[in-house]
Amino acid sequence: MPLLDFLKLPETRGIVSMDDVETTALHREIILRKPFLKRMYDDFYREIRAAVEPVEGKTLIELGSGGGFMKEIIPTVITSDIKELPWVDRRISALDMPFGDASVDAFLLFNVLHHIPDVRRFFREAQRCLKPGGRIVMIEPTNTLWSKFVYQTFHHEPFVPEAAWEFPSTGPMSSGNDAMPWIVFVRDRAVFEREFPALAITRIRRHTPFRHLVSGGVSMRAIVPSWSYGCVKFVETMLTPLMPLCAMYMTVVVQKSLAARRQEI
Image 1 (tube, rainbow, N blue to C red):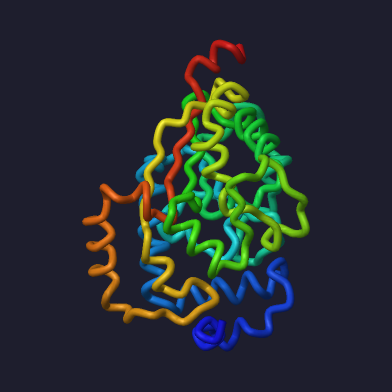
Image 2 (image 1 turned 90 degrees about the horizontal axis):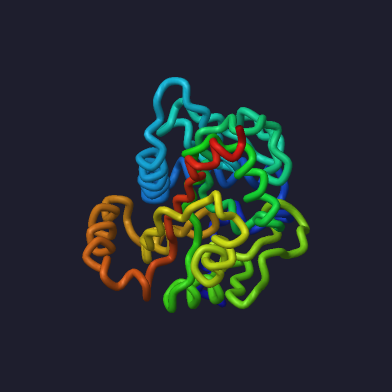
């Protein structure tokens, strides 16, 4: 599309692989220098922080930190990524985590679950590592009439609501299915609850139909000025009743049952 070619940031035109460390570093630099996009990240991180109530002594693990900066908002979080990144605390695979049983208070994910090629294996690992009452807090793409149109028309990642829970992995960023969180927690919620009875879905909140799109994300120019952030956010708030039709993201909170303590003893 000529319009998309015009809007594309010049520095992203030469990207060879989404999986390269250099690409992640470039995305981080773009996020930090685009005020509108940076404020959206801040808001998302604050919502995640509110869901875990970080206090001294809690073990909070961010998975798939990538080019993000969650530690600015949650200073006590341990950041991690499957790639070796100089600004990230640890290198960790979400499918094989180096934590003891019942040792983690919360796993925090932003735009990560839909890149995990075997989500069943991830949830088994998370269930093992979480303390009773521990949480998985995620902000991920969702499936609505609007988001399906946007993701399938303008986004480079696949969006396949009809897919199964697994997909072939070609790399941590180059493979994925943006519809996967919706598949697991909405379409197949009964399957999730049957397979992971110790993990309760305690919250699903659909939100943010426009902010990421008009910010341009990490590959496009912003199509609104930075000062308009509050206005766009206000419009989104007014559209809250319509979020089942127009949201592009959803916040999902999953909590390990306190009853698991008795089962593990």
